[in-house]
Length: 107
Image (cartoon, rainbow, N blue to C red):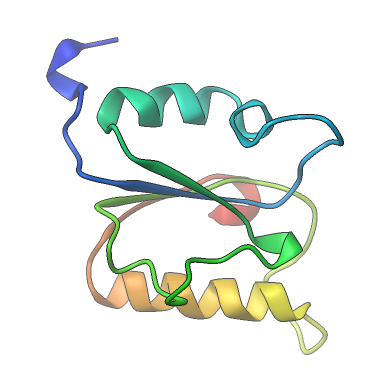
């Protein structure tokens, strides 16, 4: 990995939606975790589909946000509560012009 990218950010949040039993958050998001660890010394993982969110319900304190893929949908009247909460947090982050990388469902 290019050393110019290393430790470029104070903190990175990774929102993910699926974790197999016995796997760590880092294993669940694959290479995203490796990339994030090159960018910062502080990575927080939030399994939002299991209602794991930042304590303040905001992503404001993160310099970069990764949103991973997973099962589910982001449109419709019958969204799960966790998805409604995640969409609200990400919408706020977009309005603050934070850096966000979304993959699959996260896009």
